Amino acid sequence: MPEGDTVYRTARTLDEALAGRMLESCDIRVPAFATVDLSGQLIDSVVARGKHLLTRVGEHSIHTHLKMEGAWHLYRPGSRWQRPEWKARIILGTAEHVAVGFELGLVEVIRRDDEQSVLGHLGPDLLGPDWDADEALRRLLERPERPVFLALLDQRNLAGLGNVYANELCYLRGVLPTRAAGEVSHPEKLVDLAHRLIDANRDRSVRTTTGRLRGGTSHVYGRGGRPCLRCGTTIQTAPLGATGELARDSYWCPHCQS
Image (cartoon, rainbow, N blue to C red; front, side):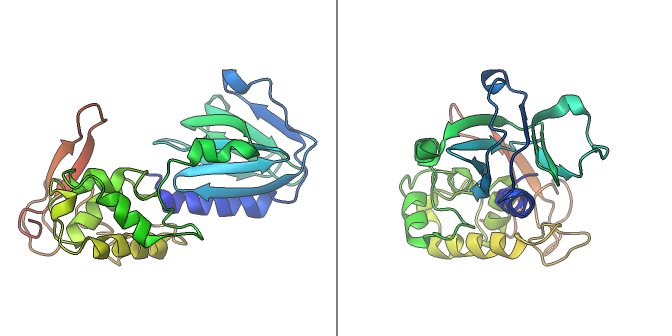
């Protein structure tokens, strides 16, 4: 599942392959931007902002989001793709590489001057150079009555966390996903753990919150109905979401979390 660490690695890989190269071909397969052609311009950089990607080309930025199914692949020109061509939403070619964005949840082209208007709502980026723990904590507690699980998922509070991390953080801090954010003991430790946990995974191809890289890589996420790795109690799962929000699957151990 794409989370902030996945997007961070994707941006780094794309940046290493594309930055400083001339964009020789630009095929955007999204109706609103199908006529946009940025070829002939220099690719300056590819950067991550939370779960968002910005590919900066000349005076424009290609803003993409993986959502649930999206992925960027890099290929050598003429090599076989690992996914069907009809799933490609954008194809960027240089002399050395072809970058293909498959099943992206969002593709748009904006002026670089407008990046802030698109991403300015995001909270501190957990993997960004400007990470601000104090500001993240302030935002997290801005609505103290909100379930902490939903507060962690809100990209306006901390940019980069998804379902996996939100569930695992609640477990590791021993709090139920439904616990009000304002009632969490030492919330600053929750914010600090979020940063340390995602930072520890940013260079790993296999995400782990248990320290294991094979089997048991998560404490509760995706383990509904199975025994807790710590105490053996059956892991519970239920959808959780506020009115008007998409419900997200929460997981918890009734014994280890309260």
